[in-house]
Structures are given as C-alpha cells and as structure tokens.
Image (cartoon, rainbow, N blue to C red; front, top):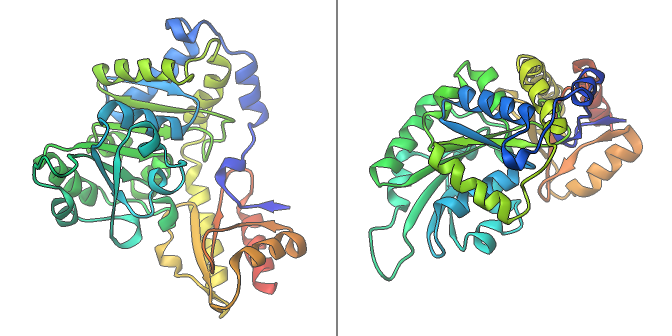
Length: 340
C-alpha cells in the first residue's frame, strides 16, 4: 500500500530509533534534560528567536500561543483555510475565548490591504483585533509557500495596527527548501513561530515553538497547566533533533515528488490540477466530474489501487508526499489513480 494520506504517516528510521534509544535524559520540567535543551537551543537559533520550548504537538503550540497572546473576547485574523480555524476542534474559542475571523485570499494567502480592512477600530462594542495568524506552508491551499515579500508585507500591516503576528510553521522547512528563504528570515516576520517534527522530518512526535524569552516563560505556565510538561522527554526530543540535523535537505525530494504526482494527474481529463501551483509536498486536486464523490473515490483508491489519499471536500482530494514513500512509488500511485 502506498500511503499518501499525510506526511504524519512517517515512521522513525533505524538511525533515528538508535538516536532515541541512546538519548541522554533528565527531568524536562526542571530544565534538566540535556537533549530537550539542545533541541530548544537549536530551534531558537534556527528561527532567530531568544528562546524555544518543546511541546507534544503543533496544535498545542498554536493553542498555547493564542492563550498567551489573547484575552477572552479578542479577535484573531486568519485565512479561511487555516488549521487553527478548521482543524483544532474550536480550540481558539474554547481555550482562549477568542473570536476567529476568516480572511479571504488566493492559495491560502492574503494581502496587507486585507489585513488593514479586517482590523477593527477601537470600540467598546466590538472585539479587539489582537492577533494575525499566518500559516506557512498553507496546508489546505496545497502546501503553498509564502514568498518572503508577501509575508513581510502582511506582517508590516499587522504591526502598523499593533497586532501580534503568530506563524503556524508546521511545514515551514518545506517552504525554506522550496524558496531558499531561511527559517530565520521567515521567523523575523512573526513574534512567535513553531515547527513540527512529526511530518516531513520523520520524528514520531513533537513540535517546538520559539519567541522572546518572556513569551516562552509564559508558555511554560500554560504547558504545565494543560498537561504538556514532560519528564524524561529527551527520548522523543532525540528523534526531533535527529530529524532536524539529517532530514531537512531531503525535503526537496518530497517537494519534487509532489509535482511529479500532479503532472501525472494533469494528463488525465478526469482530474483538475495545475502542477505549476504545487510548491511543496501537498497536492490538492479535484475530480473533474462534479457529480463524483471524493470520499467514495478515496475509498476506491485504497480498495482497488492500494493507494491511500484523503478526501478534503465533496469533490476534492489531497495527497501528501513524505520520506516513507520514494519518488518512484509516488509516481506509481498517481498512475494507478489515473487508471482507476
């Protein structure tokens, strides 16, 4: 079975498992786990921030960031396709008590003018617009990598309005590899930013969030409060550290494989996809027949073609390339789907 459901399907390699088995550990809550500390130092340096913290998941990174930055009733601006709006169980409203406002824009991005238009003037009758969230890469837009100039533009507009800028960088390193923009250059556009280790980097669990030293100190209180603090976490941090040190450059293979997948599908009249829009490792494509059911087609690809992909809309599907499926297998998967 060729599994392109998500890059979260990766499993740790033998070398990563050895690194985890041999990890030096200590009490993470007390700051005594050397492997966790080394990982956090590396992430802070990578993203150009003062400090970083290791957390169990990217969703926890987002939710804690919003709880630190916002007060109940504050407004968060984000794209309409964003993960925090659609795939975190309503966490921003349930946990931070925040109002979510969806911004329009092509390919998961928006403009500085859109940010300015959405930012509310001060009024006791309205929520206070507090934070702008940017997702890079834009997952449900097809893994779109924001051009640096575009991120800088919307960030500048947010800061003109005294908004906090938070970046969901789950697949930021895919964008780094695709664009040649450094993680620190992207990081400079946001007050807080995080990266995930359990996707393209192949680790089994974990994410790390970076920001100012004061912000990270505030994050720690929420981490403790909602059960994200750990003990001998160096075992899982070692997997993340291994991925960061060994698996970043190879993300280019995933990005190239996704474009190859899209090119095969584009050769069939049964699918609607423009390979030129595939920036990184995610391919969002439509069934040309608008009476066809994407969920049923996804089930058929698994049952009859031995390929797992996800249905993300009535007629829309998503395939995600990753290190556990080599480029030849990715192309084979596309050919099987076309035949089906």
